[in-house]
Image (cartoon, rainbow, N blue to C red):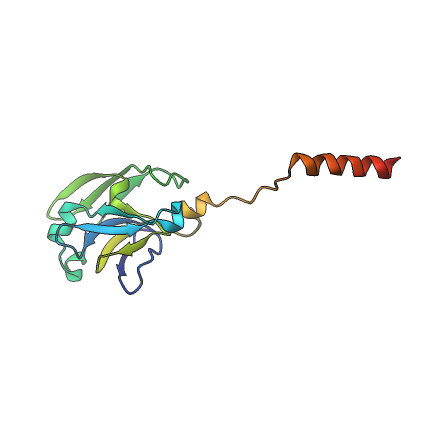
Amino acid sequence: MGDLVRVTKERPQFPADIVLLRSSEADGYCYVETKNLDGETNLKLKTAINVFNDHYTTDDKFKGFGGTMKCEPPNNQLYRCNINMQYRGHKTEEVNLNVNNVCLKGMSMRNTKSVVGCVLYCGHDTRIQRNFEDAKYKSSKLMKATNWRIIFIFAS
């Protein structure tokens, strides 16, 4: 957590939940497909933080980048996120972020050359991992009735 990662069109899968800092697009946009998370194939728009997208135009400018992020504990809410980020640039500044600035593991980048982001959650703490549940055993009313009758027959 806290590492900077680059996602390119050659490997468009996000490796972790990241806060989008910079996009190759001039306006700071990143288009993502959320098919693996919610089954929707239409593209969703994510936005890089304007301050970072305008100032950190090359990888070399990220040298010395640092700060702190305050966010909620890992949870399974895909479309809710509240993050407060303090970073050291020319001076210490504070930015409030929301779900539009976050790309989750399981999303695929589309129509964008590359993005740079800061890892928010990784491994078992990612939102997609928190959403996995064990499959529940389902049985119909007919199956339950048949099972009870079989038990009754063997018990008699």
